[in-house]
Image (tube, rainbow, N blue to C red; front, side, top):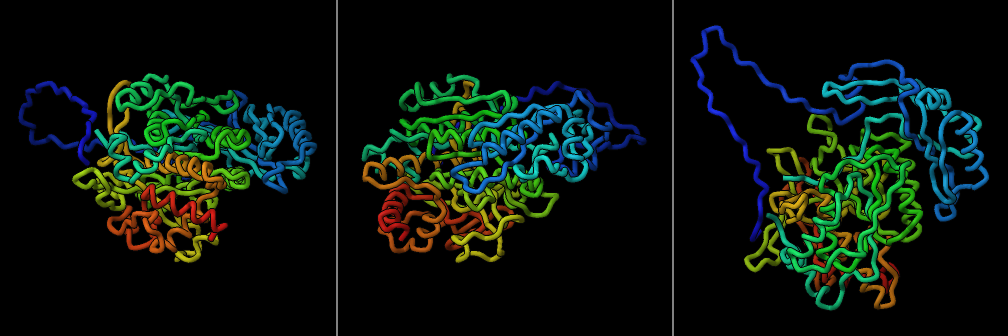
Amino acid sequence: MRRGFALVAILVVGLLVLSPPSPAAKLTAVSRYVAPKLLADALRVAKRLGPAGSSTEVNINLALKVRDPRSGPDEQLANAAVATIRGAGLGAKWSKGSLLIAADGPAPAAAALLNVDIENYRLADGSEFYAAMGQPTIPASLAASVSGVDGLDSFRKDRSFAVRPGGLTPVDVIAFYNLKPLIDSGLDGSGQTIVLPEIDNLPNLNDLDAFAQEFGLPPFDGLVDIKKDPSWGTPLNPQGEAVLDLEIIHQIAPKAKMVVYESGPSFAFADRAFDQMVSDHLGSIISESLGACELGTTSGHRNLNSSIQDRATAVGMTHFIASGDGGAFTCGEDHAAAVSFPSSLPTVTAVGGTTAFQAADGSYGREMAWGSAIDQSGGGGGPSRFFDVPGYQKAVDSTGHRQVPDVAAVADPATGFHILFGGHDGQVGGTSAATPLWAATTALIDQDLKRKGLREVGFANLALYWMGANASAFPVRPFHDVTAGNNLLYTAGPGWDLATGWGSFDAVGLDQAWIKYIKGNGA
């Protein structure tokens, strides 16, 4: 990395006059509170407050049965289900084509409808949550239309995969991944729209405008649209994630539009926003930097999210998702190796992380799999516990399960991106930085495909695994094969691996390979 800027925290320490300790003096260990990552761990250490009363509002989603992802649920059955849920004392909302009914209301009403006990708990840091004890039962009155339920606890939440502390500037990124020839050919993202699910607010456009001005980029005016809905909950205060995503996209595809869907972090709220995002279909590319420990998700959440994603795939959307920043241990180093959901879905493209090394002229030098044993961080990767290996992965399979990541890009915060947040320059890493980089590059490729009269990328993995298997046949290889480093468990090696997938991209090679793939009807 040629240049970087560090965010510096200044610690002011007062001078203390210490007297020698008496012989009886003892050293006392100072423990640091570590919040549990899994619901089972939280229930074990939390204080039980008793049954959740009417003052506890629950936010649940009921997944609707569907025959065809394109056509959506049966309208008559869905409306009948809404009436039943409202009759049980819960608010219920459904819009035509949606794959879920959003139901909110007092905990006792939800408990009675689904025949389950809902309890309140408090953790050592003072935070409280509710959780259902046991499995819910779909009543006979809903069995014809509802396939599952999610949201019966408020502990499990999506988390951003950005590592906050400078960094690779737009010029650096463009040179490193060979994007300049595409940009020089007139590709700038015009006519393309990238949609982004986010759980933190965009404070305002001041940071974005300052970033654009700092690096001589076009202004963001007219390019950013923010979608909110009260039923999606309250987003977190600005964390920098949304700003990071938009600034990385804008430096690669400065004319692409970006639509941000802001929701609260709970699974129920995030799924509602995701469902609406796919229903709206305002853009063909999804860039998602959210996820949670796969082992900590419920079957209801996985099934509903998978169903919505099936529809996104059916209508030709390309979905990139960050694979996580805990290396192979997304659930924490005190648990067995695990991956992040929803990056483990077979119908998405999971993006892992690398450490970047520039050549003297700023072009591509080399990359290693990102894995830092000191702070237990690294690019997410490994086999899923819930999803079988998809057909496109069978040639590289060693586990019988879906494996992530599919691809990778620079994510190590030590070689991360220069962004501007809160009025200050800083350096950021994480697979949530690598993900919008892939999304923005795909916007350029979609633009190129369109001007050549070809279809857009759509579901990417079929093409990516074909490219990986035939990489040596291309004049410019589409991938930088990362063959060194590890993600705290899995080691990078020649070809596809559980640390970096097929590796990062050479933009020129990737564009040429995609044109060949589509012209050959899947070659």
